[in-house]
Length: 264
Length: 261
Image 1: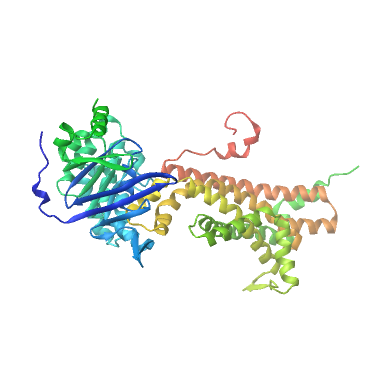
Image 2: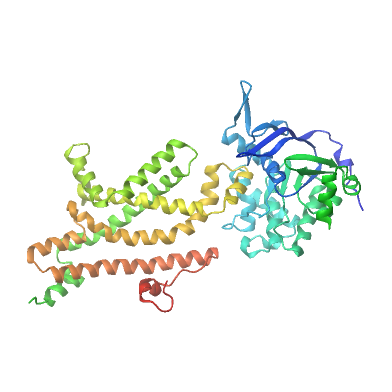
């Protein structure tokens, strides 16, 4: 077993800082004061039973969900809110969009734009949001397609691609914005088993040089690429640690029980 | 005993002879032009009303809701009278004739077109809204996660996809629109039905004349259904959606058997 290289974590600067994040859905208190720091180039894998709040927490980081308490900072900027007279007010849409542009997100169901080709999916946001000239964007998009192994699929529409190919395009689409942080929301759970490997390979490659937060139950990926594992349950962080202590020697009973369920 | 006068019927059905009557000549042009203009305006109004309806701003939602509520909930005929005579008699707006070079667009045509457009907008609002809501919310989320604002995501990601859902019912709306222009007769706008009604007042051959004018409308809607089928199959080919029913199936949908819906 290889442990992920620690030397990429030389830079101690924080990319994500979450402080006491609270989130309610109606009367359900689904995040109960989450604190989390993620350093530059760190790869954090979040596991936990469904309904534990792990995906919700991920979606709060780019403000796809509003939070009801606490603060989330990405690269030192508070996400989604402004502090005005000691009270938090939601930021303007333009500012929130600018913040989101720095945060890549990969969804469980890919959410590729079906009316655009693979290449067009990649160049849309860099052109329209970053206003980079089309020729330059196309060139970079081609490089990204090579990187995810789909250079020959540039002109295909999403419905002409397999699930694994679609998810790799979705990763490339997020990377095309040159984000400083990548969020993966159960990126392989909608895939047929034979396609999971190709997506994880791309993610492992990426893990060498990216700050990533990954909600996933792929324990192989966690062992190979995660610097830290976090176990969510009932809106709380129950346990965290590096892969070997986490798997081989979990402290908490709840963690042990959950691991035994997913590892069979 | 009523004797069907074939000579009159053919005279007013067969375009080369029918078009000798200036009423019918202008009537055909007015009906087609008004249909296209009113439908186009209706789509634009409907798009704005739908976006208003889905807006996060309460004021816009209320305005759009009231618009759709009123104009779908009252008869078009009444709306037309209200707009033309109501605004005219109070001198809020007199609908003066509009002179465009050799053409003169009468106030009645303007008022009628406007009424048709506003009424159509209320129906299109619902069609557009349903189209937008049929798109997976994940599309909007993905667009936002890439840094797009709601407006940009709507324009570039959601609406192009919703268009595929909107276009088939839009075609049906236009079919309706061509027939509904006949209501403009009530304000003497000079469209096709008005023309035949005037001729009937002159020669009193209602069976022949109204049968003839019905064929005119049938011809227009039939031509349109062929165009519509072309448009929809074009959509299907490019974007990989299912093919709609063919033109013949569409025309004779009520006849049962294979292909009927």
